[in-house]
Length: 275
Image (cartoon, rainbow, N blue to C red; front, side, top):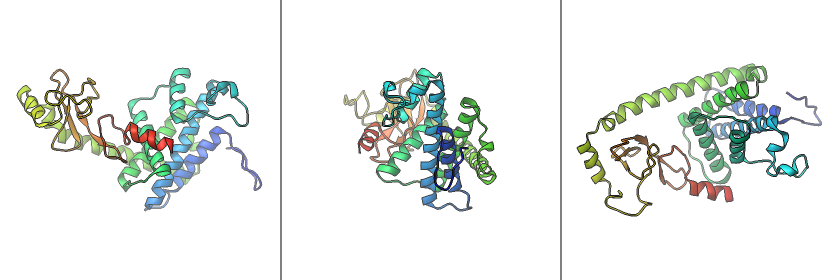
């Protein structure tokens, strides 16, 4: 970490990112974090991770962290935002984000946007899960992309809590996967006749309603053939060549149904970003 005096705080991208991560985890050092702790833990962990992403981009080429590479190094030059960082890392630095990492980043981005620009409602389990995911992703990104061992740069108690949060997140994920498999088993085994019957129960289906905005797109075959089941958050693709069973999520701002695992719909993301 960069040295700081009482008169000056000077941190490079890497040190600043690690400092934000450590600050975020500190909010969870006490045994029963309150909702305010959830908020600041998410904000600081996400901010720290974005700085780590920029550090990796800078290592590829120093100009890549600026919106206009020709402005690189100028005091008033604007750096890339979150979405641009992801695009440039994949296109220019050959960094590959798996599906889990992308979901973690998008969920955290959505929560960050709600916290900073709108309203937020998040329970303890959800907060612990996303904080654990951010801790895990930060650790892996530092190790794999920046050749940095996080445990050597944070306080021992912070590292211990990060390990705990990572274990909590992994356990919650295992519980969610097991519960999901149990709930959707009946939909995975539907016959052709049962699939047709399920499609007929959907009032907004391509066979009955030509309005393309009234039904859901399948995340597997990309056809607009997903039916929302009586379980509410379970969708079934009625395309017999696909039969994908997917989770339906609801935009945290407007309630729109989605099948891509997002926490905010595109319209709300655009609205919040414009504020």
